[in-house]
Amino acid sequence: MAQPGDAIIQVRDLRNQFGSHVVHDGLDLDVRRGEVLGVVGGSGTGKSVLLRSIVGLLRPRAGSVTVLGTDMLHAPDDRRQKIEQRWGVMFQDGALFSSLTVRENVEVPLREQTTLSARTRVALAELKISMVGLPPNACDKYPSELSGGMRKRAGLARALALDPEIVFLDEPTAGLDPIGASAFDALIKKLQMTLGLTVFMVTHDLDSLHAICDRIAVLAEQRVLVTGTMKDMLKVDQPWVHEYFHGPRARAAGIAED
Ligand SMILES: Nc1ncnc2c1ncn2[C@@H]1O[C@H](COP(=O)(O)OP(=O)(O)OP(=O)(O)O)[C@@H](O)[C@H]1O
Image 1 (cartoon, helix red, strand yellow):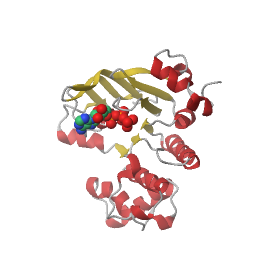
Image 2: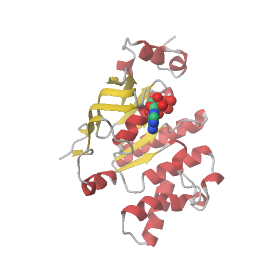
Image 3: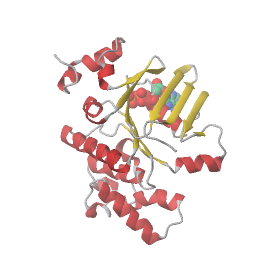
Image 4: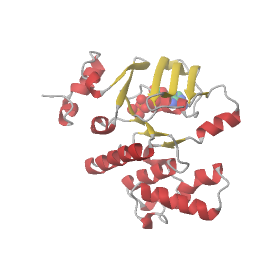
């Protein structure tokens, strides 16, 4: 029986390369059941490439990705698809279909992956839309009629459509004002606590890391250089890590002291 804290995602010896450009080499990472893991690193260190490798949008050159006990790079299609139904992904800006309303967007995974009736699909979509704190009148709006923060919430509602165990979030608070960002952080934390979600979150946002991440994984030198709590990060000597967690922004976020 799975327990909180078990590694729900295991990435081993991952290699990603585009032409001669090696992005990851020998990258290992565990994501534990029930945690919010923040993935940070300088620009171009391969945070999004790592996310895309785990969710199967990009095939790594080498290594293994095991999710919920399944070897995702070698499992038969039907087995892989079953696992894919147990996660949701929210891309930056929500990545909504512009020609569909919010409700229709949230219905997409239900349409594709289930045989539920239209009525049930609508009811479930509306439930998810309210869970992420959008008002009922957002259901019939098109993405272009929403603010950036509302679009992110709609993207999150779609990621939650199939009641996932894991959600992947790519820079969820990017582009939000500080109040919107902290409201979004609070929403993620609430969903993690109430639904028992495991959250894999790529972020640059030190406030989010501080407020909601149980652990942090730092990408540098083509791998996950270090994982640990915020307290652990403050002790790391590597120059980028030190600058990131002790720099002016970290001080402003109340992470490091002046
Ligand atoms: N499809 C692709 N083809 C070629 N190069 C790619 C491709 N996808 C990503 N890269 C390269 O891989 C590297 C890592 O990209 P990635 O988007 O994962 O970085 P990141 O850490 O998420 O950066 P940022 O913080 O700026 O969003 C970059 O140098 C990028 O140009």
